[in-house]
Length: 356
Image 1 (cartoon, rainbow, N blue to C red):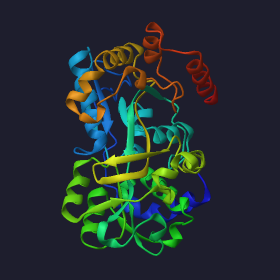
Image 2: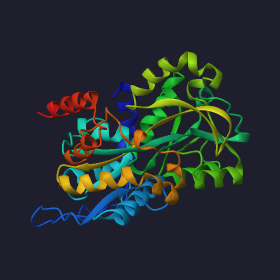
Image 3: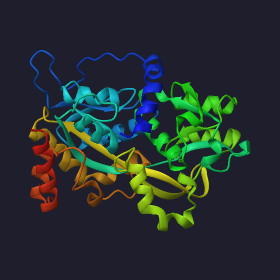
Image 4: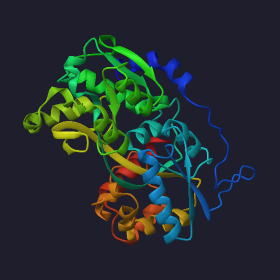
């Protein structure tokens, strides 16, 4: 993490701690808190709260796994991955759906994770998520990121630290820092949208531009996302390598993408990252093998439950260089199906060796 991101993190730590709701750190389905053993017939998958994107992703996965395998998977909602990834590492939850960057930070003890969670294991990449980032009212007079200097910016987001890094990366892309704006602490995305509606902030974070809550706000007041780094879509090809390097100083695996859809009515440069299903070494090879096989063979069922999965293919689901090592059960399936590659093996061994 660079100095700018660390500076923002220090400023926001107390505000976020005050805003985060208490969540009981108890064993959640699939773990036996007395013996430490895992009940492979009933496993839990951690997500964000009901109604949010990662909850929809996790619910679709849980449904397909429960209907198509010997494993019953139950969704367990948490405020964010920064809360449930430590529980995954300690066998208090069995699976989780998260942004790929959060997994990288967790296994390396970086970002907002004070220790490396080396029991975390990758299962499948389940797609790439477009994020609108800084969004303003259409009638605000704000036309580009650099116009945010001196403006009131929503901050906090209830422990979703990745949002802060994403937003700080956007500021840095036009030479601004958190000192150049006024940070207004809000609890979550809903509170941020309310603040924008009521004129208490000038810019807020919005995630997937096609998410229902953001579409509703667009219909109510009219909103627009801002081009990353003030780069126009026509300039992206020329500047992409430079943007990727700058982005990934803040958020691993982040990349720019041109999007037109949802709240974005014309081609706009925003960003995206991978979405991944992870587990831990505490879950048996047999259970993970069964789940991996089910997801690969029945991936089309995911789209029927949540349209965001549309277009996902088995080829998309295998990332040869994930942030966390693959689980042995997943590797067993990949080898049987001829999916596993020399590149994947070398990367896997590199990650495992880094834990020693």
